Length: 399
Image (cartoon, rainbow, N blue to C red; front, side, top):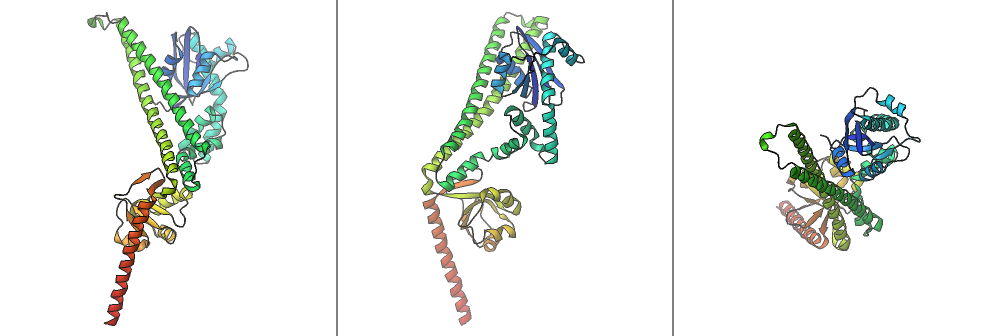
């Protein structure tokens, strides 16, 4: 079960509700119908199959169940200008095997939606191949369909989404102010995740209540009669509900983790802002190799008087050393730099151990007072060593 798979669905609401789900190649993933299938039960079933990016209906006036489904999943509603005619729907589903007319209508709705979005899918596929974006193709499709943005806008959103927290923190560090719009952006994302998590929890509670009802209803069954047709039906229902609950609990945990991270980002921003005049902003690199430097420099913009935080300083390139010399005041390291690297760089190295440093993805924050004291002691020590070397040279010449 791939819950990240992008799908297209069609819904036929009524006393008996049917739904049909297709993949983005137009293949049938599932066609089902059931009596009194409400929005929560429908969501629980369909969400296990993947992510619905488009939802189709055969009605020009969008049914409330389809509208609710779209509102809760973000799926784009695809509907005709006029109700699809009976003969038209029959022709659409003729080659497929279904159990009833409700399933026919749901399948016709999903096929109608798929055919409408197919040209968009083909354009995205072509663009992704030509521009080496196949790794994020599904993300592009998701945004283009659900957010109704252009392909280029979608790519820009995807490639910059993971940098959002870093971008805001960088702006705070440079401007020493936190704009309300940036703070509210993080806040709105957190609230969106909270809303999604709340919805999942309600769906889960609903399923648990249904499961308890089923267990009470069939509690009188003799365990020895488990092989009867009624018991098999009951066990099938129980198993489905339990799987749904397990899936939703995993989704809730994932959303809650996202919420915790976002709240952490907001707290971090507040901490940075409240101490902005008392901290040094450090720019982070995993190592001093060319690949790592080239990957991050366009965003870090390492410049004169910067201080770096480097995980492993012993991975090094002459190109990077040449760039850093005369620009970087100091390099704080998580593992001690070898004497060879220290001599090669000619930059002050400070061991991370014992320092109180907070970190984000690309930046770290250290107490200005603590760092100044450490650097001063390093400069004094450096001066003593240089004086000692000069005195030794003078003595050797005198002799």
